[in-house]
Every structure is written in C-alpha cells, then in structure tokens.
Length: 311
Image (tube, rainbow, N blue to C red; front, side):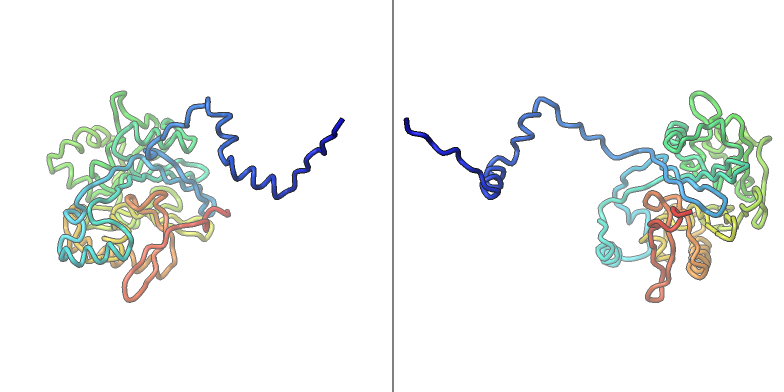
C-alpha cells in the first residue's frame, strides 16, 4: 500500500491562508445583527478636581445652527469670516451649539450654575453625573436668556425642589421690567427664594461673582477658588471658541450691548491668559473647559486635556 506523507503547514502557509479569508471569523457570527447607530449624544457629564471642589460640566443639549455669520462676526466681511474659519478647520455653512451648565460640589453644598434649555435636558445630564435634582442646594443664574433658565421648571413643576436661587441684582431687575415670557414663567415665581447679588459678592465660600456685563445688562461670571486653585465659570462672555474668543471685537447677535460685550471679552480674556486660569464657557465645545493664551497679538483657545483630572 502506498503511504502518503502528512502535509506540514509552515507559518508562511498559515499567514497566506489567513489573508485569503480575512472575514472568516465574522461570517461565523453573522447571525448577530450589527449594532445600531446611536446618533450624537444629547446629554453627558465630565468631572474634574479643583482643590477641594469637584466641578462637573453637564451637556444639557446641543444642536446644529446654519448660517453662523448671521450670529458671529456680523461686522466683518464674508471673505474674512471664511478665511478665519478655514484656518480653524471649521465650516462657514453651519456651527454646532453646546449648552453646558456647571455643577460644583464644594463638599458641603451642591451648586448648579444655569439650567439649560429644558428640565429634561438638565436632569438627564445630572443623571449622567450621578446626581438627582433634589440634591441641589443652590441654583445660580448667570443671566436670563432662555437657554440658561429653561430647566428651572417643566411639566412636573419646579425642577430643583430643595434649592434656593442666586442671581445678579442688575440682571433680575432688567428682566423683571422687560415683559419677557420666559422670565415671567420660569424665574419670577421663584423671586421669594432668590438672593440678589452684585460683583464681588460670594455665593458660598470660594465662589465669587464677577461682573461681565454686555451680553445682557447684568451678565455675571463666577470665580471659584479652592486650595490655591482657581477657575472661572465664564457663562456667555465669549460664545464661540474662534468667532468670539479669538476675535473679541467681532459682533455677536445675542450681545445686548455689543461694545460693552467686546470690552468684557478683552478684560476677561486678558485676565485668564495672564493668570493661566482655566475657564468653563457655556457654549464652548463640550466638555467646555479650556484655557486662553495670547498668540500673535490676540487670543487663542486651548482645550483642557488632563490638567484637572489628576487631583
């Protein structure tokens, strides 16, 4: 009987065989359906350490807005707007808007800065961070635009049942006399639970109000100081990391007093750059935390990476 030698497979043969059937393993499991696409996240949370504080930015919503030069850079030519946008690798046809309240856990108080567009948005983002609305001790309103007060109440009533409220006196008085539906529905009913403050006043120990007028008549920023570390909750002083922050003289549609808003931008940007202080911008790309540096006689946004994750 003729005997046949058992074939020997070399490493080269195995590699060639594997290359010939690259999807063999996938075919065997093809009965499993492909995972569905989930779409862009509408809520999220990011927590960092600032001294003894935990600071959490809450993505309470985002949306795409077309024709951004109808909002930013209204006083510059289309060519200049396009050149700046191209250099920053962003389109001129649309922009992504982010809405980012901030939660500060001081260790003794839970303080929420602004409330997003809706109760559903802010409660969803808080859930992502592991918090519930009833845990909030203080709600601070930087100003009264609808995307900052929208989450104060929803279909179920007041969103933060155990909170007291803090806002700027100038801002409150302006909107109380303005006949604004959003203010009248969401803020006015909370007047008796609201403390009015001015620049330099403290919300709690380590959180100080900073006048940042211009975007609205009484727009406020808030400086956090804990264990030698500082951070500015900057709200809407600059509403885009390129078209507003990098070009503080560019006019923004939503700034009530455009000259005052530009002056505020320059003052705060200069302070942030000089002190190398991180800041949270309500409409900056999520997680909305970054730094400002002076570059070529102007300002440049530097996103946070891990500097405040190592506490």
